[in-house]
Length: 302
Image (tube, rainbow, N blue to C red):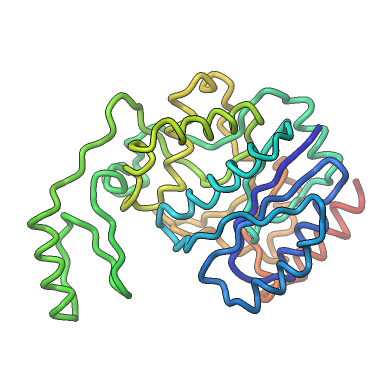
C-alpha cells in the first residue's frame, strides 16, 4: 500500500513538521504546497527541514487566498507532481497543515487496504439548503478581490471608499450573471478527500484536456468545495464514491459556517470516539495539549 499526501500549509512550521513526522513511513510520500504569501523565513524553515527527505517534494507555489480558485490550483499542482513521478500510489490523501491523524499509520493503511478501490469525498447535490442561493451563488456570480475589497457581482452592496463604489458600479454594468458549465450535474462538499491513484490520474488528465472548464472556476467562491465533487461525480468513478471524507470536523451550529471550530482538549473525548482517520482543525499555538493527548492516548495505544 503506497500513499501520497498532498498537504497545503501556510504557517506554523512546527505543526506541519509534527504532522509529517507522525505520518512518515516507508510507504508514504509527501507533496507539500506552501502558500506563496508565507513569510520567506517560515518557508525557508520548512524547506530546510525536509528538502533532503527522499519522500518529501515541494510543489509550485500559489497565492492560495482563502476562497479563491488558487486553493484548487495548489492541490492540482500536487496531483500533477504525483502523476509525473511515475510512481503508482494506491491512495492520495489531501490534507491541510492544520489536520492531524487520529488513527495510527498502520490503522490508516489497514482501512485503505480493506476499502481498496473506493473514493472518499463528501458530497451533496446543489442546490444545498445551507449555502446561500443553494450554492449557485458561488458559481454564477463573479467573486473578485481587489486590494482589500471583495466584490460579489451582481449582488448589490455599499462601500466606504468612493473609488471602490465606482469600480463596483462599473463591474455590475459590464459583467452579466455567469452561465453554468453545460453537461454537468453540480455538487458541493468538503475541500478534503482521499482518492485512489486511478481517480487522481483521471483528474490530472481531465484538467489537461479541459482547460476551458477548469478556467471557468476562476472568480468562483470557495471553489475547493465544488471542483473535485463536480469532476468526480460526473466521471466514471461516480459509482465508487463513498460520501465521507474521513475527517472529524466540528462546524458548530451556524447555518453557513465558513470555518470549522479550532479543536482543543475539551474535544478529546469526541475525537477519541470517532471512526474517522483524521481531524481538523488544530492550532498548537492556541492549544498544543490536544495534539499531545492524541499522541499519548490514541496513537500510542494502537
